[in-house]
Picture (cartoon, helix red, strand yellow):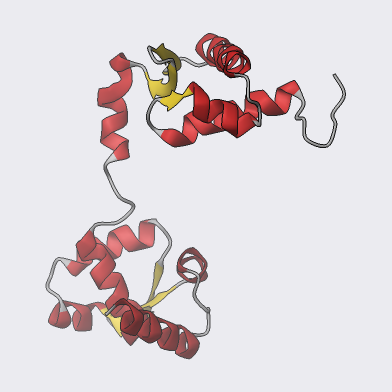
Length: 179
């Protein structure tokens, strides 16, 4: 089949159906799938979705594509793997408390662990461990204590400048915009 101006190749159509099912997180109607691939034929959309189901169900161990009445299709986790996935799906990268400690470090850097304890509480030591593990802060020995500052990974992750004074202005502007 040759590709014309308004027509997708079958592989691209399958990829679009697969992407829609993956991103939706819920059953998707055949009408919506037909729209995604740019066809008026619901029969063609059903055939494409069934082909994606055959491919996914044959290749994946924990994920499946299911056909519901309607007809609708959904990409979902197989029931026996929900407990395993739940442990990872609901856990954010950092706790709210660790994020708050991170904001103190970003605003007051370089800041010692002792100063953080005064401003927050002794729980900051656990937060610092988390923040160092994800690579958002780095500690540097200053005498008997450590001074903490944000890393370039932190700046990249949050879309901030690596220059500390510019970063602080960006954070202040974001704080004002959120109010």
